[in-house]
Image (tube, rainbow, N blue to C red):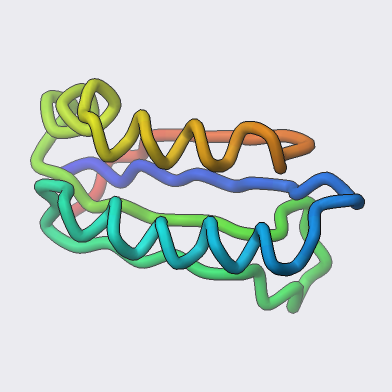
Length: 96
């Protein structure tokens, strides 16, 4: 099992309506993925942090990550995020 973790920092000038539309689209795009589980949402900012929004996808091995990254729902979500992002970080971690 692999966790694919993405952290997005939004541009300061990104409009709240645009961000809400991206989050609604994320629900649709992620529901089409082949995941063991997934979650996404705004940062709680409990310890500060550099991100505004993130997602954690649990997938069946590295092949699952590669399949998601090559999928149409991933591409569509990335295209919606791109004009609003200041930065994006991702990492894949082994999961028990």
